[in-house]
Length: 174
Image (cartoon, rainbow, N blue to C red):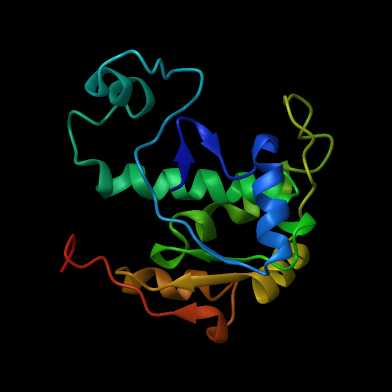
């Protein structure tokens, strides 16, 4: 899942899990779930209240339309920015939905992750560059193609054809 009660993939509390996955040369598929921004989620609130706090348009549009993509993008950006992916080179990650919105924001993520832009954070941030991200994608990341054909061209600016795998969202999308 893209998050577990607001814990995203780069969270340092997951270090023991990553150590075991690294030792096993694991392949990890991550599918999006409901967004949960830690500062807004109170797990004693009913789900509709939590959704409106973390996804303000949840009452207007179905969550898979946008929020699942944004949550996956958030968790994979966290995985990169936290240095978690770089620290575990023997783990392969499968990113769903043609990379979600990640290909659209990676230039900005790389630019803002370097000083002096990245100055206020509660975590150590791994500065990223376009070549570093492309190298990690070439070695550690696969991207499924479910079901967004118009996103493939942008994804291919970051990843090569051999990193693409078949995926479908059946029965959820045609």
